[in-house]
Image (tube, rainbow, N blue to C red):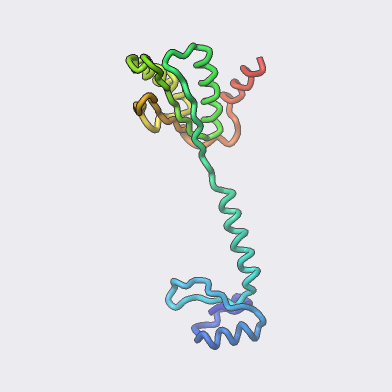
Length: 171
């Protein structure tokens, strides 16, 4: 048992601990129920809950949430369209997000899956400086998908590659 001043009182019965808490005008709160014997403290329960919620909120702020952004391509994509999609994917990766690359085959394009695989390989090669392939290209029905993840640690500030992208969009 711990008193309201933070001093260790020792092992007490439940009645004695409750009497001490009532005498102090505070609550008896079980801090560590799994310990042998369980640890209880005389504190204001409302204040205790407030501090606990504040700690939980702060820990949630420090967590990093990685989102998966999807980019859809066709196997017979033109170079300008390819470059535009590549620029978007580069922005996503630089922000620390995963990128799911999806090649959609329509009609007779299914006969030329090798063209789709070549587009995926080119895309991955272009992003190899900032991303690595997490999942190799897989064909599921009429779609071939692969997942790219940022290589290394998540950048805290946009690097020279991000500035180059901004420079291209302003031109």
